[in-house]
Image (cartoon, rainbow, N blue to C red; front, side):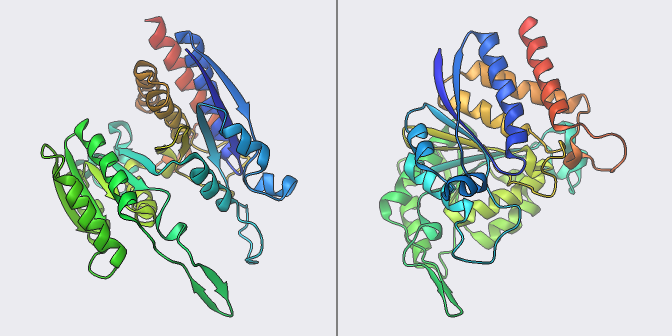
Length: 358
């Protein structure tokens, strides 16, 4: 099999974690006889410095000519206070819109090997395995009008029935392959956009009689994720709620650095770890590359339909954790020598080689 992949390292720790993800991708290609053409492009704060745009035209052209996009993270090391300065996040929003990726898939699974890393008791979170299905192209991040002027700021939450319907169908289809349970998150007691959301999600649920369905207010969901996380299978949510809730759920898994994501729905899938640029540790070689590496697994599975290869990567990550590999974010006691970014990648590569050899 052959595939073309746009490789956008981005800013901060993005290049560091994506370097390990690339090594794993290339190793999988060699081990399983696939050819991946990896083409690097500029995006984020670095692109703004060199071109004035977070998503420059050459990168726009590149991402439209590949099968998948692998992204690190984008953002300034220090957030400017001048609202006229182009924000790297705008490029990310533009990229999602350009690719037409309306569905953001964020799995959160708690590994037995790092139960001690969570602030929760092991018996409380053991077995947690949920997916946040976040609508990605609507809502307050895109709604117009918006503005900041003379001490007054405003943003607009906008959703259409069709936008809610298509993301709801995505959530139900995913649930059918899992434990057949969907909970839709809204704030329908105060927001008209959420009234529409609940009505449409409930209507779609009628088409999936085999899937258990319920609705939950977002503030209750935020509490339930902490109080009883094992109740969740698939969480269906709008753009801003999904952004916040998936970051909250990362605490269950032990670290934001553990979580991958896939943005799908268009012709080209976008894959990225959910963490940000982490400028405080950038360049130190201590960032956790697992989220980026697991994003490669999602890319292989969803875009290239290579399930065995994706499973091999996940098994390699599990083995690394079981063998005690811990980047700094996964060390619960602060003692001992943490595994570096490259060492974690190297161990996972070794696990892939050992698995293939056997």
